[in-house]
Image (cartoon, rainbow, N blue to C red; front, side):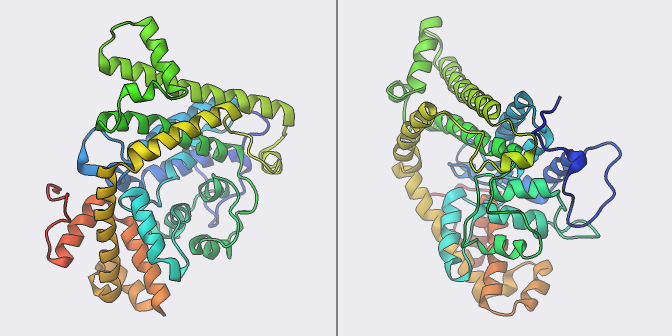
Length: 390
């Protein structure tokens, strides 16, 4: 049974382009299904989370990350009486706008696009689902409901001016109320993202060998988790010990969010999703003690994983690839695919062309970006990636 503050698909604010709704699927479930069937969602399989996609089959990609976020979002939404389909739709779409090579690619495109309105992966995700997916006869994009679009645009909170150009452009014709907090399901998707990456970055960092279980024993949350496993199963095999400890870290985060959300909802007593937005602060969040502990863990991961010498070396190499690809397409837009040439011809100035090139480069997978870089430059794959194959 849904709570009164849940978003109701039967009373959605609707779609930008009116459509007959499905006889069998509620509006938010239909949004989720369209996202899963989109080209951009499939491409997440070959996009970096932390490690470049080819570095190992066991590391998370943007696709596996998005699936894990969706699983957490479904759990939280169900426990809190929210619309599970909407929470899952926002979770599955939240990273659609990431370019190849994760935040490294985003940083590179941000620098390149600074003179042309910037680059932001949340704004790019909105652009993908409203314009760049071109499969339907009657409209560009996926024609998602207002609530799903709102969640994609501002699940991390209100978006303050100056807006990324992709958001500003879209807001001219469709008001997503960017200055307010998102509805409860989008807030669930945002916290689910935090839970998922805090958990799986610990897993992937251990697998990479950049740190060990002994290092994690010194940290809050992770240290007690390993101690609890050791107390119950002395001498447990290393991989089982790791899994049992990290699933306890995962559970501690989820249980913390549920406890805080229930307390805040009981105090605020919102009677609609609109009332949740009007509170002026997020209602789905970690407790202060958990947030403080996670800051310690994130600082550890920053130094030992995200800024590890091997990761930084790879970041430097792929940054070169992204910047050179962008420059090549700007200088010779004829290298863009045939189906993009009509848009190239319609580009009125360098900013319009740069935004087109940014759309194309951002849509690339890690694999395709490196293949195109090698093909267009006539050079072997960038250093450190010579083993990267099709």
